[in-house]
Image (cartoon, rainbow, N blue to C red):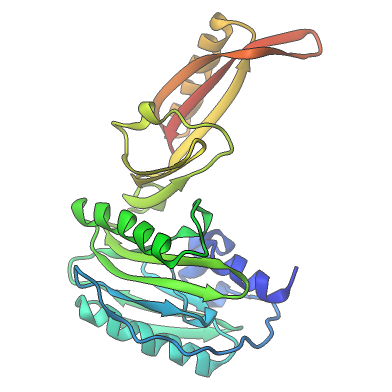
Length: 286
């Protein structure tokens, strides 16, 4: 894998760094060696229909990721990090958000902020969705499809940028404000559920706000972080017993059960002495 691809992978995944690490720069020790990235011209941002800032990002060090009450990025030099803060400080200021400090170490930069009403910035990357990345019209339509429900749910969009860099296909990011929770899994966020299995969309209709049926196995929604577990069962009685056992497990781990469905398989599956005829799908909040 190219080193530049490693940067993109880290930027596209907040899980690359834990929330605890993002709370203190001294805990960060990034050891990814990154080559210089060509610097295409960055288009000037402009106000979107609802006041959010839009434009294009071509340089990965200008791409912000969000966690807790910080924005962070990977920047090769201190000068690149200053470009990052110079870009994002006025965007935050447009929404009354005050920058309270910045830190840069080991090619990793953090921008801390404080909003007037205590809300925090969260981001969503569209790279995992199914769309025609060669069509700018399709990307623009998808951006609108995600941004409009945010506004209706009171999650104020502050920025949305198309991202064009050679290390991954054309995509875009969305930045918006939401209420913070100690456990970020419990925050109302724009999220994607994609677990490799077909989704029972109807079971989730009253639990979250469905934004997009992206594929039979992928959906975009607004709400708390969904969890999914699938289990095989020999018969309906075994499926019912498995469901009760898993409900107990969820309760013991402070997770909220949503719904389940038992489905008869088209063809039985045999493993050892057991023949499984049913699959049990279970949904819950993390």
